[in-house]
Amino acid sequence: GDVYKRQDSEWCGWYNQDISFIIDLQKEETIHKVTIGCITNYGMAVHIPKYIRLALSNDGTIFTTVREKTFTTDEIFREGIRTEDKIFDNINATGKYLKVELGNPGICPKDHVRPGQNTWVYICLLYTSPSPRDRQKSRMPSSACKKKKKK
Image 1 (cartoon, helix red, strand yellow):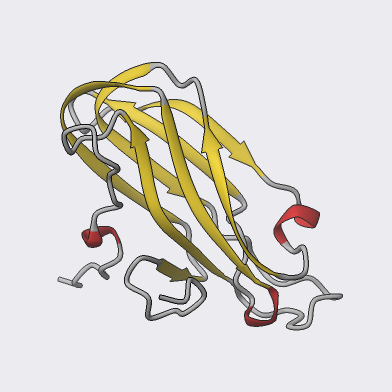
Image 2 (spheres, rainbow, N blue to C red):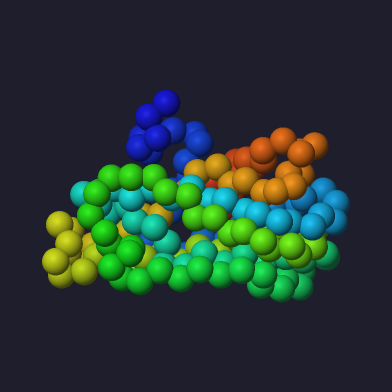
Protein backbone atom coordinates (compact mmCIF):
# COMPACT_ATOMS: atom_id res chain seq x y z
CA GLY A 1 0.00 0.00 0.00
CA ASP A 2 0.85 3.68 -0.13
CA VAL A 3 3.13 4.35 2.84
CA TYR A 4 1.71 7.84 3.26
CA LYS A 5 -1.91 6.82 3.84
CA ARG A 6 -3.03 7.28 7.42
CA GLN A 7 -5.30 4.25 7.19
CA ASP A 8 -2.40 1.95 6.21
CA SER A 9 -2.31 -0.61 9.02
CA GLU A 10 1.47 -0.70 8.95
CA TRP A 11 1.67 2.85 10.37
CA CYS A 12 0.59 4.05 13.79
CA GLY A 13 -0.09 7.73 14.40
CA TRP A 14 -0.47 9.86 17.49
CA TYR A 15 -1.72 13.43 17.61
CA ASN A 16 -0.42 16.04 20.04
CA GLN A 17 0.95 13.58 22.61
CA ASP A 18 4.09 11.79 23.69
CA ILE A 19 4.07 8.05 23.06
CA SER A 20 5.27 5.10 25.11
CA PHE A 21 4.79 1.38 24.56
CA ILE A 22 6.42 -1.84 25.72
CA ILE A 23 7.23 -4.90 23.63
CA ASP A 24 7.45 -8.25 25.40
CA LEU A 25 10.32 -10.12 23.73
CA GLN A 26 9.09 -13.40 25.32
CA LYS A 27 12.50 -14.18 26.80
CA GLU A 28 15.65 -12.38 27.80
CA GLU A 29 17.49 -11.33 24.63
CA THR A 30 20.59 -9.35 23.78
CA ILE A 31 19.34 -6.61 21.48
CA HIS A 32 21.87 -5.42 18.92
CA LYS A 33 19.81 -3.14 16.68
CA VAL A 34 16.41 -1.41 16.61
CA THR A 35 14.96 0.36 13.55
CA ILE A 36 11.95 2.67 13.65
CA GLY A 37 10.48 4.05 10.43
CA CYS A 38 9.16 7.62 10.59
CA ILE A 39 7.03 9.64 8.18
CA THR A 40 7.29 13.34 7.41
CA ASN A 41 4.38 14.97 5.60
CA TYR A 42 5.07 18.67 6.09
CA GLY A 43 1.75 19.95 4.71
CA MET A 44 -0.22 17.68 7.06
CA ALA A 45 1.90 18.58 10.15
CA VAL A 46 3.27 15.02 10.36
CA HIS A 47 6.85 15.16 11.63
CA ILE A 48 9.55 12.99 13.17
CA PRO A 49 9.53 12.78 16.97
CA LYS A 50 11.39 15.28 19.14
CA TYR A 51 13.20 12.29 20.67
CA ILE A 52 13.27 8.51 20.54
CA ARG A 53 14.29 6.68 23.69
CA LEU A 54 14.84 2.92 24.02
CA ALA A 55 14.96 1.16 27.38
CA LEU A 56 15.25 -2.48 28.42
CA SER A 57 13.97 -4.36 31.45
CA ASN A 58 14.05 -7.90 32.75
CA ASP A 59 10.92 -7.52 34.89
CA GLY A 60 8.78 -5.10 32.87
CA THR A 61 8.82 -2.58 35.73
CA ILE A 62 12.30 -1.12 36.09
CA PHE A 63 13.74 0.04 32.75
CA THR A 64 17.24 1.18 31.89
CA THR A 65 17.69 3.56 28.97
CA VAL A 66 20.07 2.01 26.44
CA ARG A 67 19.82 4.54 23.58
CA GLU A 68 18.32 7.94 22.92
CA LYS A 69 18.29 10.25 19.92
CA THR A 70 17.05 13.81 19.98
CA PHE A 71 16.29 15.92 16.94
CA THR A 72 16.63 19.65 16.41
CA THR A 73 13.77 21.92 15.39
CA ASP A 74 15.34 22.19 11.92
CA GLU A 75 15.48 18.39 11.59
CA ILE A 76 11.91 17.95 12.87
CA PHE A 77 10.24 20.62 10.72
CA ARG A 78 12.20 20.04 7.50
CA GLU A 79 9.90 20.47 4.50
CA GLY A 80 8.91 17.55 2.29
CA ILE A 81 7.18 14.20 2.22
CA ARG A 82 9.38 11.22 3.05
CA THR A 83 9.96 8.16 5.14
CA GLU A 84 13.18 7.66 7.02
CA ASP A 85 14.52 4.95 9.27
CA LYS A 86 15.92 5.91 12.65
CA ILE A 87 18.49 3.21 13.33
CA PHE A 88 19.99 2.37 16.70
CA ASP A 89 23.06 0.15 16.13
CA ASN A 90 25.42 -1.61 18.53
CA ILE A 91 23.03 -1.61 21.47
CA ASN A 92 24.32 -4.93 22.78
CA ALA A 93 22.15 -4.83 25.91
CA THR A 94 19.97 -7.55 27.40
CA GLY A 95 16.36 -7.54 28.50
CA LYS A 96 12.99 -9.25 28.20
CA TYR A 97 11.01 -6.04 27.63
CA LEU A 98 11.78 -3.20 25.23
CA LYS A 99 10.22 0.18 25.99
CA VAL A 100 9.98 2.73 23.17
CA GLU A 101 9.29 6.38 24.00
CA LEU A 102 8.67 9.06 21.37
CA GLY A 103 8.38 12.77 22.06
CA ASN A 104 5.72 14.74 20.21
CA PRO A 105 7.40 17.44 18.06
CA GLY A 106 5.28 20.21 19.57
CA ILE A 107 3.60 23.17 17.92
CA CYS A 108 4.40 23.99 14.28
CA PRO A 109 6.73 27.04 14.16
CA LYS A 110 5.73 30.47 12.81
CA ASP A 111 7.28 29.86 9.37
CA HIS A 112 5.46 26.49 8.93
CA VAL A 113 2.55 26.11 6.48
CA ARG A 114 0.45 25.34 9.62
CA PRO A 115 1.86 27.83 12.16
CA GLY A 116 0.77 27.28 15.75
CA GLN A 117 -0.97 23.97 15.03
CA ASN A 118 -0.38 20.71 16.86
CA THR A 119 1.55 17.88 15.21
CA TRP A 120 1.30 14.19 14.45
CA VAL A 121 3.94 11.47 14.81
CA TYR A 122 3.65 8.37 12.60
CA ILE A 123 5.93 5.37 12.89
CA CYS A 124 5.90 2.12 11.00
CA LEU A 125 7.29 -1.31 11.53
CA LEU A 126 9.67 -1.64 14.38
CA TYR A 127 12.44 -4.17 13.86
CA THR A 128 14.69 -5.63 16.48
CA SER A 129 17.76 -7.74 16.03
CA PRO A 130 17.45 -10.45 17.12
CA SER A 131 13.69 -10.70 16.73
CA PRO A 132 11.32 -12.12 19.33
CA ARG A 133 9.66 -14.14 16.53
CA ASP A 134 12.14 -16.87 15.79
CA ARG A 135 14.68 -14.49 14.30
CA GLN A 136 12.18 -13.11 11.75
CA LYS A 137 11.56 -9.38 11.47
CA SER A 138 9.19 -8.33 14.21
CA ARG A 139 6.37 -5.83 13.90
CA MET A 140 5.32 -3.31 16.42
CA PRO A 141 2.39 -4.92 18.20
CA SER A 142 -0.94 -3.66 16.94
CA SER A 143 -1.91 -3.04 20.57
CA ALA A 144 0.51 -0.12 20.55
CA CYS A 145 -1.78 1.63 18.05
CA LYS A 146 -5.01 1.07 19.92
CA LYS A 147 -6.34 3.77 22.21
CA LYS A 148 -6.54 2.85 25.88
CA LYS A 149 -10.08 2.50 27.20
CA LYS A 150 -10.99 5.03 29.85
CA LYS A 151 -12.18 3.58 33.11
